[in-house]
Length: 498
Image (cartoon, rainbow, N blue to C red; front, side, top):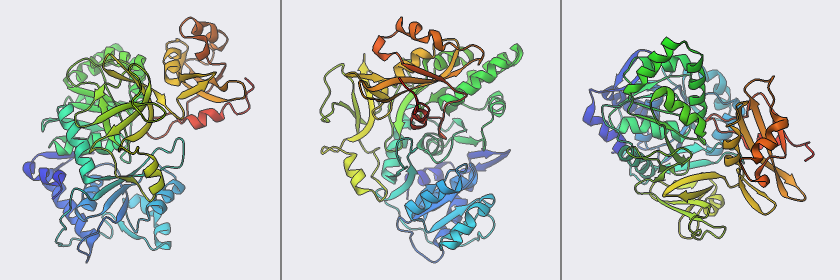
């Protein structure tokens, strides 16, 4: 039996999930997921790693569907509930899923497509039935989950993790972040990415804790949950913390005091999925009393590096390697980079994914001969803590012989009082290779600092890092996890002469 399922039997009476005023115990979760597995199997004995796609709203039905797929021997393929039809079709066709489970409201969107292609469509609560089945024995080496990369630099790839991979990712975080049965977390993250699926849902349920789902993000609703003073853990992306800070700043003093007081009962607040601006970290600490724990991970590896739960959490740093995870910074030849020098982060361990779905060549090219996974992220170690310099393909700008970190320039620009947000990219240049440019979001459109930014920055960073062109825009293009899509930022400068 899968460890995640097995552990649920040891605390059947505890509340596992809360949503919309309803509470569900681990016993409810076990029974409902068994019924889902039996429904999926029909007259089969084992799905034998067949991909099963599901488009289900966050909450009890989502978890029972996911667990049911696993208990039936299938591979769970969660679909994003906000994606347009072409994006959903891409995942369905790429995985070759022949079974699709949907919440009733998504039948209209996907029903015709499924029927036209002979996909078995299961609608929760509509054509569902109670059935008895003998569930298969599932080994930890089996494929369990396919999550798709963000696709910010290329077409999304299906990342395949086994049950063993997931167990390694979960248990590492259980130990590193001190999860217990007393914990209660609020899930505000999308459930087709590793942050929400593993860090929030799987970790809380593995620990025997309670996970409250908020189907759609709303700032005031988050604060309302905080005010109930039952939550102990909160995880979000930088854009969510930014929105919460902005809402807190517009509240009156009595509301601010009440919100701040309500956050004191938390034991842990975590930020990830995108670089956390130091300014956001410092402001959040002022209003909540909590220093955010920043960590580093990705779809292919789960979490690999983290600031400590107990100990110094350094602003601008992702921390130190987690237990059981090997980390090496490598040069361009995938050899150990010299001490104090930047290098690409390479990862090795049981947490690392099995393969890209139906992409053997890309899978092979993603690993070194020694089995290290190439993350594509560049970092440097300073006094034992890792600091991300950026994504090798989009955040490391090669200009005039220099390797420039776009993230470092962005961090400086955010210190300017007129700038609310910024994205720095490199655009092709015949003379320099790439030139540095910046898209900025202004605090007030009437106050535009572009004319003075170059001289202001030259007092803070070397001249070769200073952007040559600035473009003021209303908002940065972001994906579902809040990551800036830098390929779209670059398009803003297509016709620029620099």
